[in-house]
Image (cartoon, rainbow, N blue to C red; front, side, top):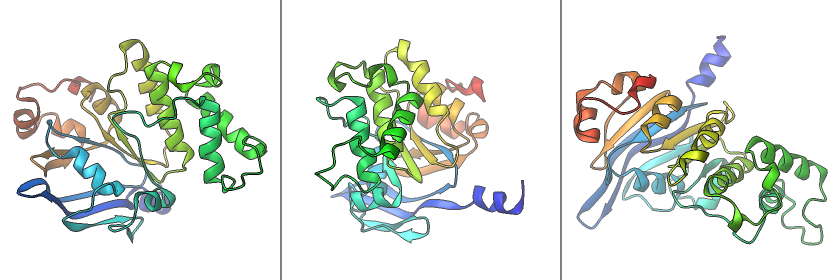
Length: 264
């Protein structure tokens, strides 16, 4: 690895500094410090109520922090609106799909890509008339195994295909950092492998934060992990180290063996 590559691989692209959120007397997050580096495959895990969703909502601007600071590519985004953060490259998916059920995958992606490329405001120009837009949409449809259902209504798609479409929409926004919130939650076992393989093949230059309860996915995907407990960071490190950390076993799984650890 040359010097430039080494600097890129350690460049912090998303940072939370002493980030806290209080709801009255409830401390949902407490002084969270988190650094996501360029090209990261970083998993955020913890038991129910650990503060994972609150932290993601803070990072993406859905919630305002009680204290602390958030930086994206070195820029303070603490008080920015969610759409401004998306424009800067911070994109997320949700635990529950946020899709347009009456559209098709192709039309959905045409709309997202057109807006990203600056054509969305040109109401007189029909979707799909720009060659670069259509080409990008077809690339995404193929990449996310949606070509064969590209003209079907989203409401008729299997749940696994809907999850793939949501991730495709996120990638169409050209993220620098992509937050995946439980991408395999609710996906039937027959569609799970396709989704796992697609997530594993996401572009290496996109920094990914994975929030997930599925330990098979976590340990096969993540290069770094952060464990949240009671709204605070318990520990961070490489999966193979945390898999054998007695604190993680006790507070997260309550057992001496972490499911999925055999993959590390």
